[in-house]
View 1 (cartoon, helix red, strand yellow):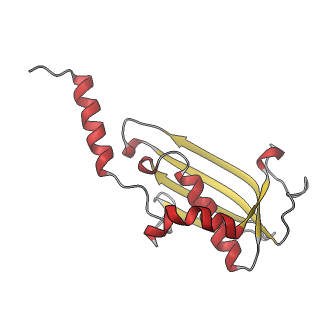
View 2: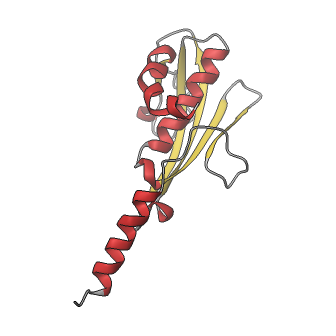
Length: 149
């Protein structure tokens, strides 16, 4: 039986993808590792980063960063969080090892559901700045990450 190299590569890639689990929710052990990290700037804005492999699909890194930001804001007593800047990139490769997502969110805690002011929005596209309810965000994303905690 003859099998083409392309067909073999596709079957091999599908087999490898089946063996890779989505990046577990947790802190990254270093800047290059999968997981999340955060730091607070002097102006009270938190920078939350997430890096994930491709097994979780596109959006897994964004959701991880948003979930971590909601945890931070909840821990500080805020009912809402303002996303004032976001930057991310997703790559799709032949396997989960060649795919992944990196996301950085700049987040500010607030107790108001109002959208960020134009002065607070540091994203060059103002439509990328918005406010999320912290409790609703945690409830919506918890099922995706609860298994990892």
